[in-house]
Length: 589
View 1 (cartoon, rainbow, N blue to C red):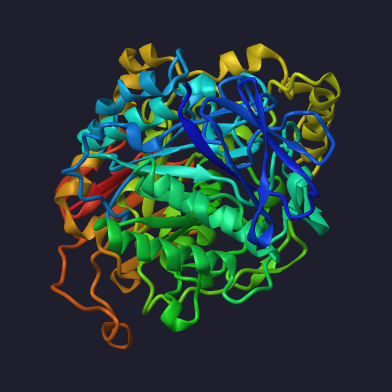
View 2: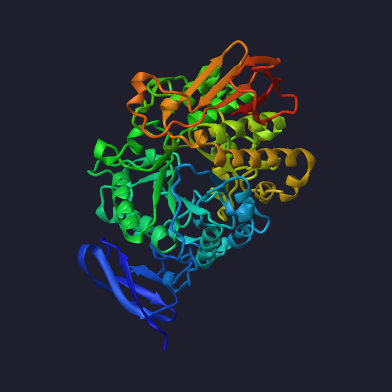
């Protein structure tokens, strides 16, 4: 006789609920607050709602072996024999994140194959491996932002058991795991949650779908329990919260603050750091302001302003939202103040945007920045990387600002060797009408950026997915190998020089010359009298980073004659004068 399992499901509007487990159908008993329960054999199962005989997957399913439209399968997360008992965690402060997509990181496209590449990440100073969403979606391949089963790992990646093996392997290598999660919307195929209850809001929607009904306590609990699931059952160390500006919540506390409260409590219980990193389009430091000071108490947030400033300085691309970042002063301000748009007018948005960071009290590591990421590559018309238009020295200039800058750097898979493979937007919707709508929607998105629609690849074409897979053999080729060696050198310097991980904004000095397009960043600078009150601890050694973004060679007076890193072999220093060819940079200490 099969082992009996207790099935529970929230269906507050249903008059009748049945669980179908194997070949048995059991009537469910209604409990408090719309929760139904029943005992039935473990295995493949689903629910029948009212008089509908269709069998629906569990909204909290942890295993969908047949896909998101099929029955769920019982899975015991506690059955895994964890090998990470000695793991004590790793906070993001002073760390380096590495963003990857499981389906394209390796040719196999599985969690087990990705685990075999973790040693490579250690060589470039990575401390946290960040996985794009892995929750179950319809089809064989997808970016992950069309997921509908938030507790289940996509079967094509290996399912939940493979995920646990991956986390074990990462911890054994000394790497923390960050999981990208999407709580602001659900995918367009396989979303049966509205049949069970009021999961979705009736007020408004984002470009990705309806907003979640955060006024409903059970929906909030669905999200909060999922946060706990990744930390407790899957042993991850941090969550990256996708597009939190789309979490419309008028409750007190806000759902983000509630996440922070419960995460802190769970971290205290588990005895290791657990962190929340928000992706937000708002440039609002309230997200990372401690709750005691009136903020939400999240640990970190993305800052796209850094990316935009670096991208424009190197590529001179000024279409769309890049327009405001054309002056080199925009990058300088982002380095010195955290946000460029901190209440300033955004020409792309047509309004003032953002809020200033309190740089005397906030710590700079709380901003996670990148020179490339899945959004800024994949949301381009062709999914092209900057390696198409930048040479090796320019690519290393971006890396120099990442590793040497004041924020938490995040790399995107393959950038460390200047990968030539694109990262395009790909889907595999089995429904022809949905695939057509997705392709048409992509074309409409590019109008505001002024990009050529004729070069946009079809997301539904299997080649779009296949072309986005990394070619690991590239890193052994001459030019790519030199870029990779530069990343390794920078990783070593970041570990060695304490100024490069100093979190105090007041210890940074930035100068930008618009005429020569030379930028100088001093890390470990002496704070002014006004700033000194907010800077505690022992003074750090000074590091000088100088980059020539211009088209002509430049000579610059510097404070040190010792070059510790250079992006180009012709960079030289003599008697306090640094010579920089166009598109080159150096770190002196």
